[in-house]
Image (cartoon, rainbow, N blue to C red; front, side):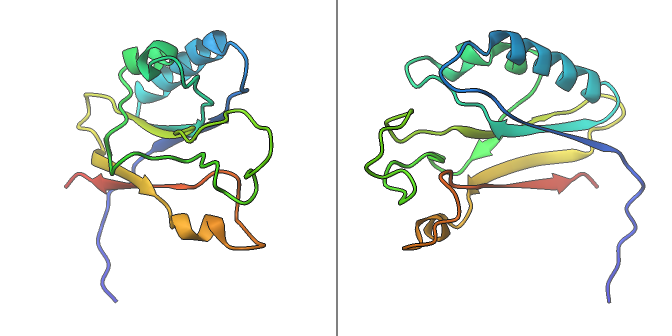
Length: 151
């Protein structure tokens, strides 16, 4: 049984599901303020279904979140979390009507004291599990995000 001593630390996790087919600019600005306030004292992870508009650049829709210092980190390939081939949505009229990334994981860290996490990497979580015939897990494919602690 190997154990390592990690000093006590604090980490804030914020998660949301933004409405689709609506202007979320007020909510995005509110979330950016919350992320920034949390990161004043500790590392802050912000994740969720952001329902971006496929026709607009991500940075223009979530500029306030990027401007407050949050980063997406390294993503392994295109993270298509809304796949129209998923059995739960295939053949149904839905929005969005094209494959795209709806789900994201951001990291915002204070500069002082030294940031708790050194980097993060996101990838799709067992995509095949979301396409089980007769028993798909969800209409969204999950994201697995790995963080590394600073030594």
